[in-house]
Length: 420
Image 1 (cartoon, rainbow, N blue to C red):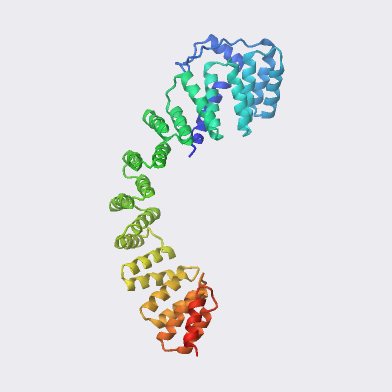
Image 2: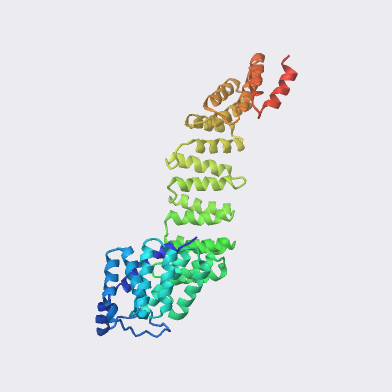
């Protein structure tokens, strides 16, 4: 789970706003009241910037090319600056910074990282730009799956800025998660949530995922409950909490969460009802609850009648020894099915109940609609013909069954003994 993209857009805007001041603007600002620094606790001494007058023209061209989004021209001008003997550390750092931005805009992240690192190594940019570049490099390394590099870069950034911001904690936590250093990742994600005025819900999901990776189900549940308390009455977070329990194979606990939501009238979508009856289906002795939830969903038009729904009902009724109801459920599935599997299930049930005429008809419908194992339907037809006293029909059905691999042996054995 890589969360770098959550932050990318916001950081990019911060970066560009700080980096796109022209030399003239920088000089004018230096004479005005200084803006509050972004990193007031930085240990790095703010460098004295002395732009070279001989490179002023190229610097202006550089800014203009970027503002016009002419990224190829940005690289050409920046490389010209780097080759200019009159360029000092500040000009070289700025040139590499713009090469990085141009390459980033063209999705060349490896090239962007390399250029940004050169700009940082020059140690000539103002603190705000210098450290934002460092932060950007850490994000890009993370996005490029260079997690060890990202971790080292971010550690340096934190050490030199003494920054304690939610987005930084979140990035650090994500990097440690990707490095599978789960115990170390947790406090950073927790810090991001606790120090943010509006923590993103996805941050909680990252924390839940980390706990699940560690098989710390109770801790994951606690975070899930935080979201439920944060958004009372929002079924999305109740279903999310149920999913946490379900992923840990705690089906009774998951079902209890959703059952409470159903009782409060919060479970009003098909996904929630499907999740609930599926949970009950995984709990021994809860066949009655499966039937109750499915029928409730159908009655409220929350569940759409479908082959799957009626097959679930048919199977559950069958295992509950409610054969008549099972037959009725499979009958409802048949016209909705694109293949003959539901018809075959119906035929088997009817055959077991010695309703031979109906069983034979259902088996033939199954064959007409198509089956993965056609031989099974012919076996049902043979049994039905036997129940109806039609020996010739039995022999004919078993001869058909003998043509298919799934029933060849059984049908052939019967024919050897009985078709004389």
